[in-house]
Image (cartoon, rainbow, N blue to C red):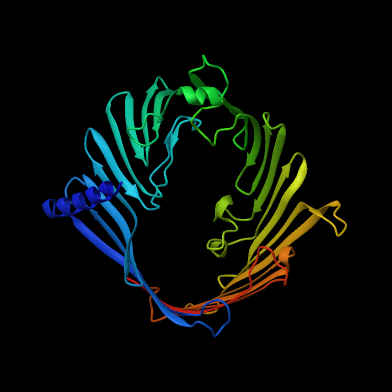
Length: 442
């Protein structure tokens, strides 16, 4: 796949020279004085990182565009995430990688699916010039996907093909699939069906049937919008031994009901693993006094202090009707446009042994308190404290950021952290962090 990267960069340079492209540079430089995280004043050293962002596109018809990131650290140059887009009246072509995301592409229930993220290097071609069919070819490391999708009279359907394995090897797997999706009144119907062509050795080790040459995967889902706020669905997924999708369940039934309006969201999901004869239940409830943030962003560490009103959320996970964990989150402005606070409490029991070796339930708790204080327009302070009963972890952290000048492009940053753990801690590690530096954005 290194050839894909080289081709991408060559195309960018060639197009930039011939199309008089507009090229924009930006980036960030961070210089830090930090310790070795064992003692506050031990192992102190200087570290610097330069990050560069580049974007470019064709000047006339915007027939191509490129965006990428690179970094220089410890005299080592690294190419970060990137994406090259080529746009034509007959097709679109994409090269992307190193953590960049494009979009998921797959059958309606993702029985055969090419994900959006690229940990390495990816390539995709989309041809939509043959109405009403759209063709997509996607290449990941040692995996080739081909999709043919069509929309006819409001109904969606398609064919899919997947070949996994190193090119030229006889044990590469081939999978074909069909899918369909239709909306009928308040119902949405979805179905996936696929088959993997088995090799003889897979046949012998799999189902044990010498005549078997195919392994099937299948799924169906019915969704009903009962009202504008209430949605329910029932879904079944299954596969035979040898089907080429490790993440697809052998036999699983899932039921869900969700109520969602501008201030309240309540959802419950029941999943029954019919093969393992076990089940999972997830119940969640959120209440927000403002719709400034979506329900998924209410308690994120880099989002909660942009909210304008209080919010609370409760999530409970059960396995075989026994509690796995329960988490409560609360976030709220304390002083308007100045102080925000967030708190978290989690309960997670797990099986263990007492001093006599008998089976007991060990109850673990985690609590955390966080604040975001905008002292002035230039100075921001973020103190936090976390406590975990497992390994008796106490984490005290303080962060401060001071803007230099009148813009937000240059900031002085300070981080002080002390993590204390029990002497016999099995998972946690004690540490002391002292880090000060400057960040310059350009």
